[in-house]
Length: 300
Ligand code: GLU
Image 1 (tube, rainbow, N blue to C red):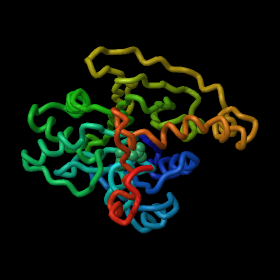
Image 2 (cartoon, rainbow, N blue to C red):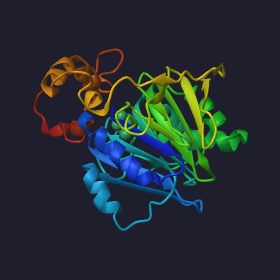
Image 3 (cartoon, rainbow, N blue to C red):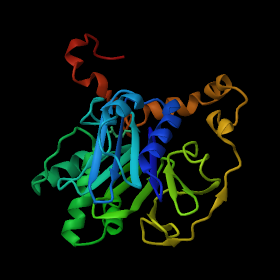
Image 4 (spheres, protein in one colour):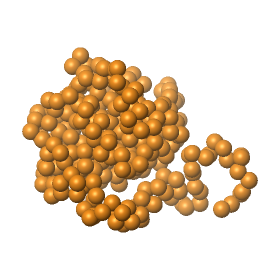
């Protein structure tokens, strides 16, 4: 599971988002992408296979202005690493852009249902299914984005940290998590979002850690609001970050080597999740599945 960064405030979002992605590079990833909404309400999405630097080179001559945006580093679980499969993913009408860490386990069933409703898909990811589901629910119920996200996540089985922005509302990020970390940074007149505190710590020490099955509504110039999947409102608990940037990067360990040694169990767990199914009878390695006829073994 890889990296999430979000920003809404008074500064240009893109430099903050890119810096945040660089801070999350230590997690490993195969592609990166960014979405911003500019002051004319234009939603721009750029993504590139490879390193964050390749994304920066690609975006170099493009318009990424805007004071709201989301960005992602992907570690492919569903679909090969490619420009199309990289996040953010957009909904059919290109009004929503979504980034996602984790795995939507029931994505195949949901995709078939959406295809029956006329939705088409560009990528092979589970993530695109989620953003289309949110749009479908939004259209069907004529509800706002928060309600659509809440209803959609109630249909989803799996692990996720997500962030969504909407072309028609350039003042709001909706984010949610289950079994994948997400933290909101509370600045003065600005908010940050990230999968860990390292992209946030240089801007603010005030953070809100989301709990499982919580959705946060981050509106420009308003206190963040937290509501659970079961529609219970929670009072956001603002905590003080006790670490500085260099400690965060080393996760509190005195050396990177110690950090890597102690992170091995978690890294192995992340590496396996989404690749071994819950019954434990099957392993899906998306990188080799297209070439499996070339392998001669039947069992490992
Ligand atoms: N399952 C998603 C994908 O394959 C997200 C992977 C991630 O956590 O980066 O695109």
